[in-house]
View (tube, rainbow, N blue to C red):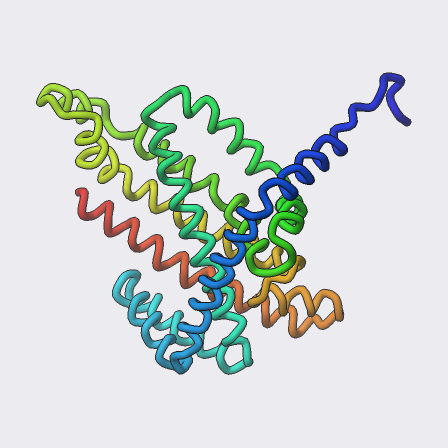
Length: 282
């Protein structure tokens, strides 16, 4: 049953805005699409140029060094399993998408988080936007990506960046805001400038919290990359999506297991980097 009042044409307004942007700013989106597509393809080509066992050993050694022996053992066994079940190319494509999307989200998110921590006016604007971004269903981000960038990898990266960026912003400004006041007062007493306080006190102390935000961004990027298979993104998400369409439970479970393995490896590595920063500060 509809309301007796006239209906607000909100959907039509949004469609008009998207149409205006795609018509008048197509040259920008095409340039971004070409650059991102080239970058992702180059990264995938570079990773697949090495034999799988070389990349597995490198990642396992990195996990062992940063997160400990059991993380290294899990990495080598998990990635060898994915190689054995013929999911290596899909795994590499997923890693490339996650790396590119996370880098873009961090490059945009960290400065915004710093600005929100230093300037209350920026925070008042940023926080409601983050609330909106985090409560909007993930599938909705796929819709505007298609008219801007078309089907494929670039649309997947665009929607992934929007979906995964909020933790990087939130935990950056939270980490800076949680720096003890006595340290800030001591820095002020010694005549430190705002830049000196930021680079020598606030950011080093906030590093573990910032790394936690980056960790969450990586996890959200990985989950969104799987969803973005619906609009043509490759990788493990494509195998999951094909299994859903064909009702192939076994293949879907194996591809999903691949996502879990990649998520655990990335999670252990990034968490260990945050712990190392905390120990260095102590």
